[in-house]
Length: 296
Ligand code: DGL
Image (cartoon, rainbow, N blue to C red; front, side, top):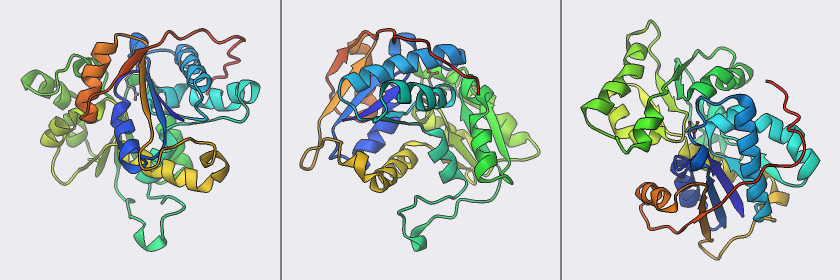
């Protein structure tokens, strides 16, 4: 199976795009809703929670895990890839969403896309909207500096958006106020971005409102299609992993798990995916051994 992890139900915005682009694979989605939001948590805690989640997904038979959560990708991915995988699961893989998002933002095409079909996304400033943790980690800026040193990347934390989304407040004057609260300063600043990346799995749920208050000439980008496209490309280039992934004839199996209330998760999940889902509850266990965490 392909495991997909998020701090909660928000990662289903990315999961939906994976199902649309690559329906044939078997998938297992885990949302750590009981401990969400991760956005303001320390690096140690995000690593601990993410590590436990990845461990569970591996135990269930996932060969490959995608950290759909930007905060987990920013704060836990490096340690999981460099310390946990070699020590515990050397033949499994964990991928994050930051590098592929930055590649798309700066116009680096997926390796398998024919040259004549490669989009030109370069030019102009880019604003990355994310959780406080993702912004403070500077992960987007670090990746952008490696891939496109000339790019002007503006990072904006929007800490009030996840609580609003979790409360189901996706429209109305109150939510619009808080959407404008973080966006208006970007539009009034000296360097108005040409593109805005919604770099938090929850934010696409506010897409309509964000689009409505954003000047039409500014592009608003969700990550789902980017991640699905780049994962497909990655699997084409990593045949040894692709061959290990189970799949169905035209459509594979889908499993959904949460660490919190299954009914609450299903209600939000069905709204995002547009179809009924069965959700199971899981209790994550501490992982043996020190985290060996290194700061980035
Ligand atoms: N899933 C998180 C992310 O993409 C946002 C929600 C949270 O703070 O846990 O960064």
